[in-house]
Amino acid sequence: MHPLFPLFAVSLPFLAAGCATHPPQQAYDLVITHANVVDVETGQVQPDQTLAITDGQIRRLEKTGARPLSAKQTLDAQGKYLIPGLWDMHVHFRGGDSLITANRNLLPLYLAHGITTVRDAGGDLTPAVFEWRKQIRAGQLAGPTIYTSGPKIDGPKPTWAGSLAVENQADIDKALDSLQALKVDYVKIYESTISRDAFLNTVTSAEKRGMLTTGHMPYTATLREASDRGLDASEHLYYVFKACSSKEDSITTAVQRSLGTAKPLGLFAVLPAIYRTFDADAEASIYRTLVKNKTAVVPTLYIQKLLAELPVTDHSQDTLLAYIDPKIQRTYAGRLNGARRQSAATQAFNKQLGAKFMTLVPAMQKAGVTLLAGSDSGASNSYVYPGTSLLGELELMVQAGLTPAQALQTATINGARFLKADQHSGTIRQGKDADLVLLDQNPLENIRNLRHINTVITRGRVYTASDLRQQLQAIKHR
Image (spheres, helix red, strand yellow):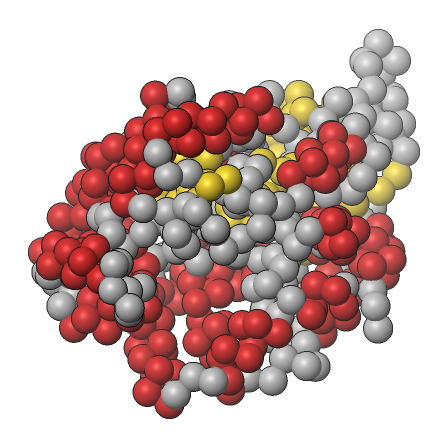
């Protein structure tokens, strides 16, 4: 695993009280001068820019001039690169009431790695998540902006605690009523026990209500069906991959017919058949459908690679393990024990599958499919550490064939657009939220430069290296 990023080794920009040389001018809360502003939409750098921030919003963005702007606090960003705060579009806060504090203590890890917004993809800590969000907005708790689905929707006796079980339309209506009452940001559907009809009807019903939908799909349904019904995003690549098979229909039918037998076919049982029947024409076809229907995809390459390597990787000395509460560390045992029981053939196939998944990402990008960067960090997902795992995801996207600019889009403007927040977030523009990350080096030249974080600003609040170090020290366990 990557050691703790070199945040604490860098020099800090000069922070000081601003001096108003022109009395008529009202002082801004914060002025950043001489910044190289990265435009994530165009992939260009705007050199020597000044940003004036008040009440957490960018009020001015202009070329740095000879006349300084009056400010309560100034930050000289000479030689630095300013990017929008990063978005992790797939995280989890979960584990029951006994893990509320342990989950809350993950929040500083996101900020320390430049992540100012996260999308909680379903769990059983919804009241706590809403309370954290309230405290973060009020400046009482340091952490990223949180969007949440609240409880997942699944079938009877679901895998994950806190899920809403649905079997028929009445169940679906009741579940969606409860989610709307909670004022969740979107609907997350999971596939552990949900039927094909319940899954597709949940998508249809949620779309009629104007609710965003994302999901893990049961293999009894096809991604094309779900996308045509209005599914807004597919989590992970297993479902896109199935749609790339020349035998998708027959594989889907086989899964459906197996449900009433002693050995029902699950996702992992049919992946080898999908791999063998991968077809370029089918791949191109599903991408056209996703583009037409504006269905986004969250690849989560990082966790797939980590889990594939889990049987042979010793994580006991990972630097970031010291910042994970022992209670959360204990949730890692399930996946770790399962990985150790894998046969050599299974391990080999998982590596092949990961390599194949890497080829899907640039192909989707080229076809115009919207990609969203997500880490899948959280309790039960072994050694997928908040913060560094998203940076690892972006590095894998570039390794797969995306440019650094394209990878940055998946973790900034794409996330904001997906959650309909792009009018106030996702890029550095006048009038937008002051969620910013100051880097020592240009991320457009090397995506790994995202690890050279100098300062994080969220809703206009400045977190220096010292601030972030203190926050991490407070949650350290060893």
